[in-house]
Image (cartoon, rainbow, N blue to C red):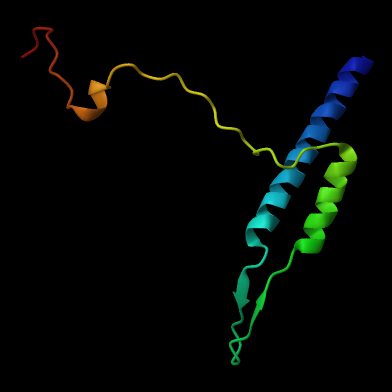
Length: 99
């Protein structure tokens, strides 16, 4: 029974790491973007998430998690050795004797 519990804890930990990686990715994308205000002065300021990104990176470093890997590595698909005629050409009429 203890093995089942440890697998559940590992799955929860993996979901937590995935959520933190996704949050880090979103903060990285928006870090440095300039926000324009909707006031009369048309104020603007850059968004700075560097402190939050450093904190997340410190936690990952303490846990031994590599943050330089892709979130979802590309899946390998088998190559086709012939062109797909069903995509490029219209479907051929069936030879079932239907009229």
